[in-house]
Image 1 (tube, rainbow, N blue to C red):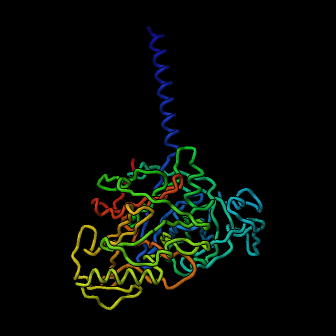
Image 2 (image 1 turned 120 degrees about the vertical axis):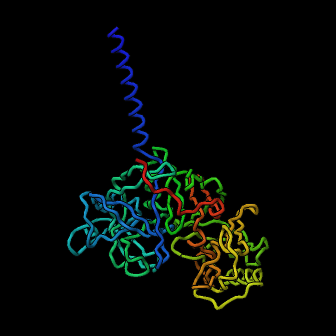
Length: 425
């Protein structure tokens, strides 16, 4: 009898140990991550804190949707026992597409070693570039099941660049130490996460939910906002277009206001052989920028549809403004005509409501939140700015080459401010 009991106990313990081991293996490689976003009130840029180095330290970065890599300044206060600068012509250099051997004439330290890989880093606001040292170090990011933050997870050899501090001197918030690029390139943040955790079922997908206190997800849906709203349910999809520079575009076929077609030169909506035209998405541009002829058509049509409301003197950089008291409020912002971006199919539209089309530019003055981009022969004809994406879930699905968009989450009685950042014990 005793021997039977001992046999049962051994089997029970073995099975229990197997289950616990299986569960720990599942949780040791999560397939979804989360970062909190903060909107800088002065620059209108989005900032996130990422833990790097050994010992781990919280480092603030500007989020650049189309940035090719993550760069940080290392000249003064970079301290880490796990910092490593790969040598010239190494595998890491090839991955970063580096063909330049970095030479440094000042004192050796992070960002300054001889015969290491040189990679160009860029300030996305000013366009200023500088040669930087390719480096590896620990990066830690918070896991999630979609509704709360979970344990921190380490990426031990994350590739980034150590850039000179001159890149921080203009255009960026004074608190940040670098830029986190999300573009489609070999060493961007989403690409490296997908590469490191791919064997654990991590999907090469990320999503932005911009707001003053917004959130960014890495990995596939679902994602939840309080009060327990699955914000991926209202997603519509359109093909995701990636430029040779790794920037994110989508196809806009036409524009409607109040369900009426706006007369625009549709040739501007296509990308020509020189890579000019089309519609790009950006977190660096605070408001949507339109080619001059599109801007003129949209503002005139919008004003005509609001002819009963008198205009006031425009506030730069906007072209059409109104008395804020003239608008009635709704769940999705000021009661103004909807603006629809008609995408690859006439039945697929990204609808822009008043909360994303009208901005209070000065006390008592509300303006159409679109900016004249002038007559240019390079770049996109439309650049969808951060304000138009606020409180919209925008998902970049690399595996399926598609862009998901929700339109305003305010319709669903939630917002991008509503992720529950209370950690699960």
